[in-house]
Length: 376
Image (tube, rainbow, N blue to C red):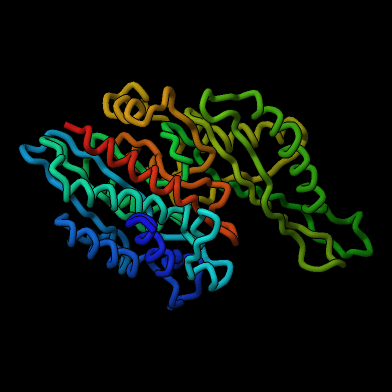
């Protein structure tokens, strides 16, 4: 296997499950083992590595390569180090089959971690170090939950002229992605004995009508809003819970829904339009977003010089879009223009048989290295 594939196999074997998805103290929790390995790899290549505070006991890893001369611009390579939970412990044993490497995080997003760091290490060992561009690798924590790593880095005042955020894009340069709202809708009724339901008001029945409006009328309304790279906004009802036992008319029902937003849409605007649509159908529900922090859409100007250079270097005539949310929007909101790029297909992410094409992994590393060598 190539150096990139070998590093990825090592990363897969080190669990880095986001602690939000595990019981306290679970041995698979946290990015620390992966960060320590990457710091060692970076140091051996002569990179300046440091751990920078993000959240307690879970720092970001930064590894930098300075230019030959004075720093006039900074490029950030920013994949995340955490993964979702494993389907079983076999996902922590990397295995190679039919040109693919299997294991948790293979594509989301340890493949990007390996491709980005190996590219930077090879650049550090070559004679092609940029004259005036600093390149920083940032292994970010907590992307899969609350994006504390990218939020901390952006809030720290760190500045870069462009961030390339590592996610599985099938080696397409992505300049726009959707935002994410986790909506909570609550209907209220009046409890009564199940034998005399006429004396109550059934909150579950009211919510059933709300679901019908969301999945039909509202979804159709959203299909009329289109973005050239992202397509239409979407809504999807995920959970519903109401009532306490069969013989009590339920007085409360709560629904959760996933609402993917387009650039220009806001949390306030979304909650307001849903409330108005329900009211027009004679329905009342309390609508709120339960996300811990804003998960906004991304839209980066593809005409920016470094973005144009990356696209040209990759042989890509126009940028792509992604339906998922990631750290790129957080960094962009913090003042760092961002694009998304990496090997792998999001269709394999979070699955029980997660894998990445080894050919695509190596091609991704080569594309990154070629771009880094082209920087002034």
